[in-house]
Amino acid sequence: FMGHVVNVRDARFKKLTQADVEKFEAILPKQRVYVSADLGGSYDAKDLDAFNCDWLEKYKGHSQVVLFPTNAKEVSELLKYCNEQTIAVVPQGGNTCLVGGSVPVFDEVIISLSKMNQIRSLDKDSGALVCDAGCILENLDNYVAEFGLTMPIDLGAKGSCHIGGNVSTNAGGIRYIRYGSLHGSVLGLEVVLPDGTIINNLSTLRKDSTGYDLKQLFIGAEGTIGIVTGVSILAALLGANSYEDVKSTFRTARTHLCEILSAFEFWDAKCMDITADHFNMSKPLEGNYPFYVLIETSGSNNEHDSEKLNNFIELTMEEGLIQDGVLAQDKSQINKFWVMREGIPESLAKFGATYKYDISIPIAKLYDIVPDIKKRLTEAGVYSENESGTPNSKYPVKSVNGYGHIGDGNLHLNIVADKFDDNVTKHLEPYIYEWVENVAGSISAEHGLGIMKPDCLKYTKGPEMIHNMKVIKNLFDPNGIMNPYKFLPAN
Ligand code: FAD
Ligand code: MLT
Ligand code: ZN
Image (cartoon, rainbow, N blue to C red; front, top):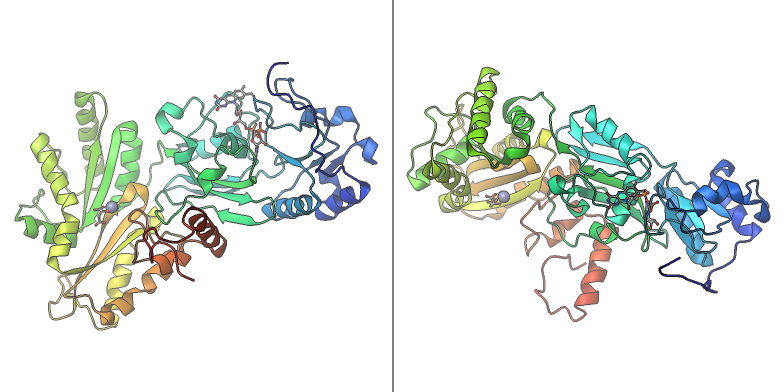
């Protein structure tokens, strides 16, 4: 046939022996090690054809062994041994590859992920799904559909292909136009490197601006640099219906506005007061409320969009989720709303010395940290507010504010003090970073690490990740001349 033909087996690779089979059977239970009869096993060549032969029946190898690990640790032990013994392997998902990537060329050992197929978790708020690499795409789609969610990828092979195979081929498919590339929707990966190292980067954060994005290397790597064992992916929300407050409104917005929803921002009363004062602007709503939400839609039909948004406001007011709402009547009013939202950082910075914490936190707990910090600062004697939430100006901390990008699970926690002062800082750090670590958040959702956070990276990234980031850094910049002292911790 046409195409790249390899005629010569690489002599470096060990030919399997009985001892290797015994080792595999020591790592995995015997029933998860398929060995061909010519190597003393109970499977004949025909039994192994399903693994040796590709979907197009175009390519056929003759592997004598198929291994079925069920977890990352087993994959790690298998790879470590193969690496030490120079035994070549081929990772195999659903074997629907159309370019012959998933079958052995000669006698490479097949590591099939098909028995590693458990769903690990689903965050119904954000739509983040964490699952084993060997889950079949159609099963995942059916599973998330029960919660009104949809997988961001779909393709004709969905009944057989694995999510790990989709990731490894960077598959596109028929939902790509709407949901884009897996480079965007894959939130995290668990990967086993050839030497057996397990890299656990199963983040479920939508935003995480803490450094080199190692997972991207494995998206489309086609099993050439490691085996993907776990995937965390964003399922686009299309419909779940139960919420309270801002959170409920967010969910309703995603349900009712779905494809036209282009922004969902929120801020609290304190941000509103300080910003309205700073710009000397009247507040857009008559009453005062603890939270404000700015929703923007961008569909292709203006009339249709505003009808939908009007219906949405009516509905959320009827349900008591929103106390008041106003739809911008023209471009200048839209601009006014955005000036208000986008003017928050500037207004706070003018108000006093602003301690900024740009954190990713699961949507369910997003605002919890704000009252928690107020309480902590009050107990420390550096902040005080009266019953209606007005801060006492005699204390060093002037306000504790929360605002941000709810849809992205990204809170901006800002503490404004009369000056930057160790006596305030010590109550905030490392407490906030630890808080974020405890909810598996990110200490930098979108602002990066700079000179502020190299030593805080450890709260979001494990030592293996940091080590590898340093290796990459040294590879590109061995003399360390580029933007020194920042980004990565010194030790
Ligand atoms: P496999 O075929 O088993 O493997 C594919 C490659 O990934 C191999 O190199 C393999 O070694 C590696 N691999 C698999 N799992 C892992 C893992 N866990 N870790 C590391 N490496 C791994 N593709 C598109 O992009 N868009 C389409 O619309 C599309 N439609 C298709 C329709 C049909 C009917 C078929 C048969 C295929 C289609 N494909 C399409 C091809 C596409 O690449 C696969 O269907 C799918 O993404 C592969 O997943 P799989 O689990 O079958 O992987
Ligand atoms: C914002 O969302 O307003 C920006 O990230 C800046 C900030 O956090 O203050
Ligand atoms: Zn922001």
